[in-house]
Image (cartoon, rainbow, N blue to C red; front, side, top):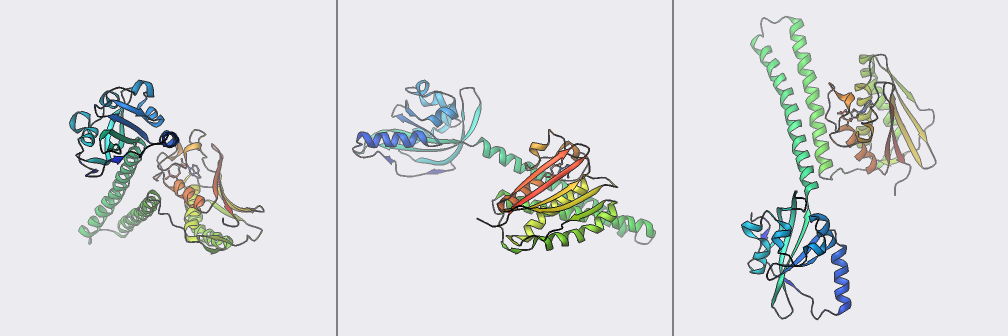
Length: 368
Ligand code: ADP
């Protein structure tokens, strides 16, 4: 439990605090989105800011004058109290991850800093503790771990299938007929494609997580990008018996954009349109422009989206009811949103269950 521990100087109280300065400091401390409390040398709470009230559930009046351990019931209280250490001037704690218990008895993970409080004559006055509720960060970490395990699991199952069929091809190299050989190779190819998508999603997700989704802006012709995309997808449309139409009667102005990332966003939407459509369906890509924006809509007449799922589909890892039995990881639309918002645009969705879905990407004509 010594992570974040450091030998450091105690906090020096402000010299000869005139009244105005005190009010000013009180104002700052009360406004900070960080829980801050101070104790005297007997560990009785001497100040308790509004954020400390928010995190612990105790009001200032309930906390003042009480032994800090009774109010915080921290994971460290009985083991190695950080405030005691600070008061004994042994060390301060910086970024110590521990827990406290709130008034309702719930355990809250917090990130804590402590330091001794020394007056201008060098005498010990008490100690200060600042902490932040990090439940949200912990939840994100858990989600991240889950997703990483899910990716790893999906990758492993594709690899196991590939390995199994390669082994069959090797062992029975002489007695396999052509039909079986073709079938096995087809399965290997399918699983390799799956792996390819998974790795792409995983890398893109990792970039999103670290906030490193860097966009390389350049002068881009959306018409050309979309036209090329349509050509690429015609083969898939023929294979799946789905009609793919392009409605683009006006030439769009060129924009400053990252063409590679935008292609990724369009690809994710088109892949979904195919995935959630059935044979005989139609997918239409159309463009429109307003004085300030360009709008690109990908519409399908497939299964549509349940109204309960609609508000959540852009959340990372969210998969709607209609995704049951379909491949995917719930990352695609989160990537689309991040890319489009990185361009200063928006993604809108309309859908009626059973009638299809329409996703519209809106991009500003000029940046900034
Ligand atoms: P997934 O890998 O599940 O497709 P996405 O992030 O791409 O993940 O999409 C999130 C959810 O939105 C999907 O699970 C599905 O329920 C819904 N969805 C996305 N696109 C469509 C579409 N064109 N038609 C119907 N449902 C869709």
